[in-house]
Image 1 (tube, rainbow, N blue to C red):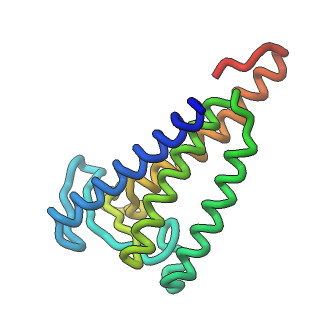
Image 2 (image 1 turned 60 degrees about the vertical axis):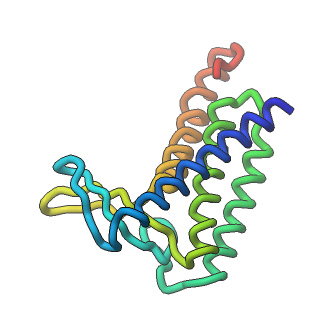
Length: 163
């Protein structure tokens, strides 16, 4: 019961942070407005009508929300299937699910996702994204690190996993 409460707390915190920042961006910045933070980083209020990095941006509405919900269900199943002792992977799935729910809330309620982080140089810029996208990406990276480095090292050493 404690593990479930802890995991749901991480999911809820991720969703709350994501939604609060998006509301702040919408309330204080005009669409397309940029605020430079560092020479390579800006807040940039944008709408993403597709999925990651604006892929499928011509595929609107409930269809895209349904695809998102199916992917979220699959990730939930993977999370449920992961052993409890894989603590880093458990945490990673929690932030992935939190990020996915944050973006799904936007997609269902607004028809698009609010993005606001832009890495750029004078000649190049990365796709605009948000905290939910960062949670999803970092979570995926943590799962890969846990699987291909930590878990395999523990199996080679034959000792208990330390996570």
